[in-house]
Length: 582
Ligand code: PEP
Ligand code: MG
View 1 (cartoon, rainbow, N blue to C red):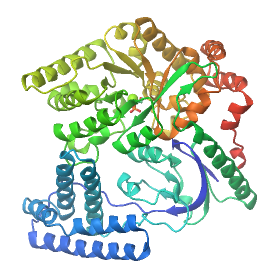
View 2 (view 1 turned 180 degrees about the vertical axis):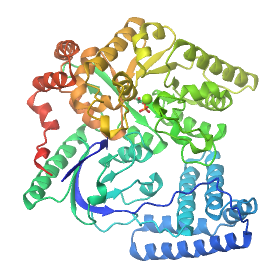
View 3 (view 1 turned 90 degrees about the horizontal axis):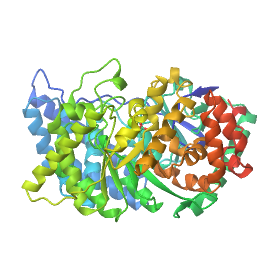
View 4 (view 1 turned 90 degrees about the vertical axis):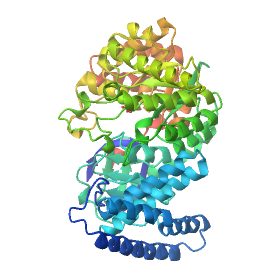
């Protein structure tokens, strides 16, 4: 049987399913109506006892693994920490439920550590959040599966997966992830992509998969096959062996510059959502950070991050990237990226509603904090600022004037920053692509957001599986707007990159090269493959193919055209045969 979902982190895997049950939802704002403090404090004590026992059990299983043992010791220390416990009691005193109090106290402590701007202490902040979450779960009677030491290779199958659970997991053993909920831009999808774990999300029907049975996951196409015949299992193993071989062949592209076959220099930058993804990209010698999705600093937290917390993160990137561009996009909240602490109303058409720059212009007090933080970090490296979801000139002008206000404040406080910080915008709404000649006169750079551009051009929600066959960035309507934007940026003399998933799609690469794109921003794990594929593309030939693509009338026509021009070596990287399975 084959299920179809959304490919969220590329790759392929075949391994036994490990089916996880869904954890409870914990609301950090929940108050306890009965206010029985004694009872709540006892519940916390019991939770601490249970979690201590769980940690002891885990320790027994991983004797000899000193790094993991150290981590468990650390978790036990946090659990017994006086300040943490006092924090919990304080929130119970204020009337919060036991589990909400635990989450709030953990977040307070984590935020304090992050504020200190020390990378070691920032890592401890994640440990505190992890302990808080596990303790809260344990108090709700849910014991989380221990993924920190797995005995065999698995594909995790779950309703949804918390990024925190994944961040402490034995990732060497997790060969794939399959979830029913989630979108390509959901937290866990982006984290999995950073870790290079093939992932399919938004996949209905996963409840039919039995724990322990073999699953073949094709996260290039977004499919998961199970209940396989013996013959299909053999075929799956062959495909995975070939895939592993290809991955090994990519090693030589892990730290080099990217060129086309006819030696046109192309910049390959990275998309990140946190500092760990930035570190991975640095190892791959990325040409810079093309997109930092800062909204992830705001998500899953009981309160918004402070200016100091944000400065610490942005500054560390500015310093570590040593002069390479660090493009910090202001928050793109809303759509499929909720921020609980903003208490936004649910909307019928979330992607067409109160989102990203629209929220920031409406709530300048929140926007100013982020702008000040980005400006302050600009004193330490090559920081660029980028506005998402601009739909008209007035929005851009308003955003720039709030940025001016932030600069004025910092000047008055004698805070250093780069007066000439480059200002860019995402071109991801059709109106801005159509008017890109006008916008190009007002910004220092463009970055095309093909994920949103595709959904808005085709009126197909990017997270809705039912319209997934319509949502296609190879549609000639989408391509024409992308070509127009690149052409207008070139004529205005400003750089243009593309940071949507299309930049990492092997079928789209030669078209984008043909349109004249010179900057691709992709998920870290994708960098070596993209460099390899670019080295197989001839710029002059790509121009001819791209011209022809613009004259096609359907995405199928474009795909057939591109497929017909790919060399055998290039096609080897796309080769599958997976259709025979499931
Ligand atoms: C895009 O829309 O292509 C993009 C890169 O932004 P996001 O996926 O974060 O909306
Ligand atoms: Mg977008």
